[in-house]
Image (spheres, rainbow, N blue to C red):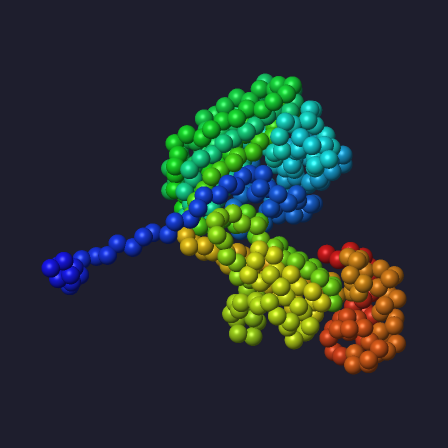
Amino acid sequence: MKLAAIVLCCAAGASVAHAQPVCGSVSTSLLQGFRAIGNPGVGDTQPAGAAWTFRRSSPSGLLDVGYTIGGWSAGGWANPDQPFGVPIVGPVYSNDPLQNQVNFYYRLPSFTSVFMHPGYGSIDSVAVFAPQSTVTLSAATLRAELLGGNSNGAVVSVVAEISAIPTTLVMPTLVPYTTTGSMTMNAANLPLTLHPGDRVYIRVSNNGDPAEDWFTCDLTMTIAGGPVVLGPPRETIYCVGGRATIRVDAAGSDLQFQWQRFDTGSGMWVNVQDITYADGTVVTGSQTANLHGAGIGRYSAGDYRVVVSNSCGTVTTPAASLHPCSSDFNCDGFVDDADFSIFSVSYDLLICEDPAMPALCPCDINNDGVVDDVDFTLFAVAYDRLLCS
């Protein structure tokens, strides 16, 4: 009787419920995101495809130029129209002097955090979190402190925009200068589900004070859902026969990785495998966050990306190029007299198939099978540049 009822139920077209995928919660933070991107150098732009980006409230919005200042041990994104080239975002402050990436501060911070410097007057410093897949934000804690007493305090707030509708997580809060300690603020109005295109903003203002001051903070969030790429793969330079690693930093539970390379012949992305390729490149880590290559040949150059996934979503990173510093024959990052000595030996041997020629014939810069005057001309250009860049 029971069996018949079940058969009848299913025959009548009753739907069978399927369990939705459940992904565990993880913790991620502004500090983790900033470290995944790394301190910028002069001329650097913020990497495409990172969950955290940094802005200013005016006049142009984006901070896209890395700026390094004499007296600073690391760069930050600066606002070009501000006096003294003051960084608006970055680098990291630590309560351990050995970890400090900045050698100037009014007092040592009480915790490791990210420097966010509002501009003189009305220009705010803004950090933006934008997940690339759907995640649920269940908890968030903002910790902040003002390291100098020049101004009348900094004002910080945290706001989520879901489908462009703002939800205040942390009300605008005045952070005054104290000689020790920090302020901790727990987010309200949670949980919230963030879809791709939604944002969480940390905004820091100078509270209308014209004086310069020094603010630092971190936002720790508990999220569950699909992957969030914090640090996408970056352009990587290698020397022929040397080693290189391309990496991705991601947050999420039970993450899986698959690196891919763009095949110019087919015009398609193909999965990278842990094998020794035809040009002698030995690849490992093709299904991890770190793709390693050893004995890299010239033909391994190209565009690479990684697919990051779990049961709740998939994110494909932007492509990053892997390309050789073709005249750095000893793999020290420079093209100098040591490389010229190696080139001279290969130039005398001439033919790449000569048994005495160094492995992979790295001095054959134009890949024509011989080391000749054409290669010398290419080497001379690289020699004048000195640095592999």
